[in-house]
Image (cartoon, rainbow, N blue to C red; front, side, top):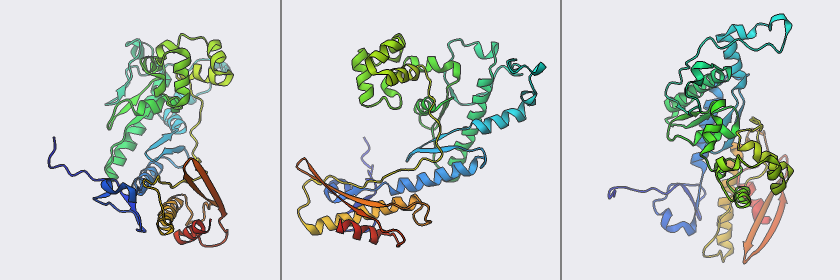
Length: 347
């Protein structure tokens, strides 16, 4: 189809080298190469820093979920913008009655611009019955649109996004329309959005739990699972899991955006085919693993003494058996690639 196409393999660590690089022959020599994610980690750090720089310091809550994904809790920022745009929201309730309903939004048709907007069951609902939740989500979509534009302008990347009232829905929304689009799921559009979806598409249901749910209830369609009573789900899956599933397929997710998520361990590994059969070869690979881990420690702030690992573990699996050794990393001494490599050698 494309005779002039030059397909480039991702960057790799090559046996015997001390730095990853782009090797033209990597695909045909994968036995002596190990994929390096460092180029992606570098860009990921740049994007995350740009997002944090763009948002108000005192109002932001950003959670790095993976190398190419973040959750952003915009609640505080949206609240401050709502009060600026609609000062009436800051007035005390009449007659000091906190149960008094909010005044209706002074607008009906909202300007969603180029967003992929999930349909409502009732197409006229937004005009007939304006909702403050919709206004809040609209402001969130404006902020996210500006963030995406800033990333594109400064470092050239396009991003997809999902704007919703919780993490689970926003995650589904971010993958709904790609590339370079954002999907908005208003609270009253949640059921419409989820109804045609498979349960295995939902976060935490893509693996064994999703398979169990599909097997137990003989369907993976959310539309069919909605008809199953919560008591039946609890009986089949256990109290906690049953309640969680019942709520999840209805778009309920109470997990918070955690701005302080820190990884507890790092792994650098490779399956060798054919197997390693000499100490010299093993030592060369240990050097690569140590360099790989150290580059990630730099990302975690080891050079600024923000975080420092306490132990190093070496695992060797052969013929179904795994052997492990552990070494303490001396505190108070300089930690660099060489130090990690020496520790790995003596483990």
